[in-house]
Image 1 (cartoon, rainbow, N blue to C red):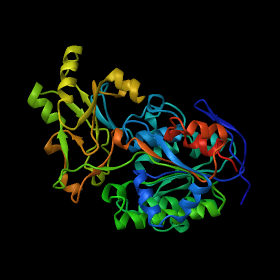
Image 2: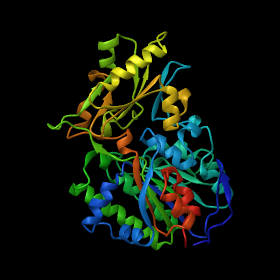
Image 3: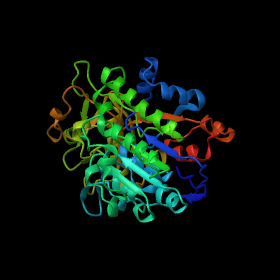
Image 4: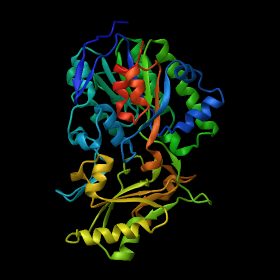
Length: 420
């Protein structure tokens, strides 16, 4: 294996000085810490156990809302949504009057870490399970000589557009996106590229299909995390410094009878205040089988001509009277508290409790897509995520991690903060 470059590079105000070892940062989508607890308690993750005994295991605070695009964008830029601009999977563009998916690099307002690392001499590869993230991750990277592809469309990777071709000959057949294999493929791809000297600076981002479907103690989850552990072991054997976090946690959002525990905000608003309200659910993405577009965070746009402070206060007070609503803020307050871009927000932000999700109207959501139980995320109760390193932390980082570390500090800690 070629010795990795150690040239420092600076991105978004942070300087990274990588060691002469491979770097592998992993975002295990939806991986609440309880999944690790369950697998470790049953002896299913011996390599993770080795990591945490030698290195560090704790918590970090993710970006709000606790959704995939928001947090992955924060991780790959090292800054909060107020800086990089992506405050949800989905938003209402008031300039065009369109509801828009934020799955394109055109929505990023700053550079990711990856092109700078490639220009500094690192062999950079980013692999995501979900194709919706690839364009964000690939921004500026392919032209700098890096690699970016998804397991969802691994068979469509081309050298001119993805920095690599013939992925299936390297990793295996393209998996189904609604499977645990979609995530394991990401990790196997990282191992394969590292073993074949194609990369030495990896970002590996999985999908949360399994966490949406299974609780931590379920046999399917335990088998899945054991398979993750196998790939962690291979990365460690190849000499990688591994940093592991998640974009968000996951909780059951059900009533005692197992049915989804939903507050249909648009219906409630119409019944109370009249028509014209627009509820935006930023969890919305192409993967409705995961969550049915039901999460614990919503943006509310008032009817045109009714954006008065008095009406906002009335609606906010009324929202807080609804059982299951835990937090309501106007745009300016939510932007400040949650570090969000105000121009891509509604007039009000609403969050719900640990076991509650927010919807638009009953007709808007296809609950058949989530038969078998709803597990979802988006609110404060999925904000805290694992923060794990394969190496001990340097004293300054050990002090920082005792405070309020963020999941988007993961590259800084992995590259700069570990003792070899």
